[in-house]
Length: 223
Image (tube, rainbow, N blue to C red; front, side, top):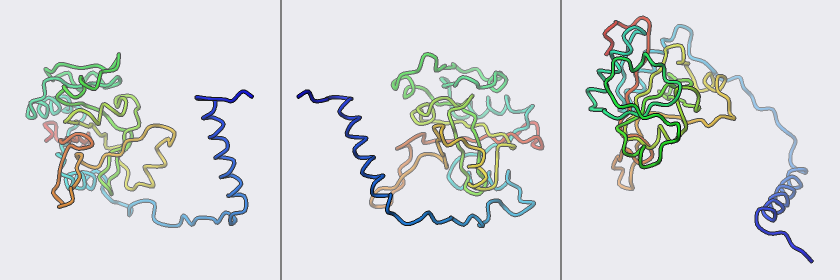
């Protein structure tokens, strides 16, 4: 008698497991409504831009503010201060952002290798949404963000956040995000602690994070 093998057999096993789970759940308790009457936004009048900048700074990230007209000059200044010469630039980054920067741009089409990403000085991205309450930036691989590896392998990350992308709470952020997209949630530079609670940075992502908040009310010179 013939038997299936390889991927075909794997598919059969998977269906068997799922059938057992469905059977086990069939006799489970009825679905209970989950209350959603908790606070889903900040108090009226809260300044989400200021709170976001404060919380991001708490994570040991550097926060800069720039007006739209001063953004290119500020980016150039920040990259110069960091000594960045070779920068990964995902597709969709607006050309004016880097107009004032004399750096080598590394595109990701065709896809850069792990060695290329590791050998770069850093990456610049936009974001999908930012959360004031937690100081979190969320990337969803959209235009100007690139694939997830671009923001995980380089040792430096420069993220540009428009004020209108900042929301108050996680609940508000989830309303703007598509759960089917690859979401990367960033709260400061990558860091962890060993068994002796010694902080180690750069284990799971960039050691250094600069965030530029693009705010129409910011002075032209930024910083």
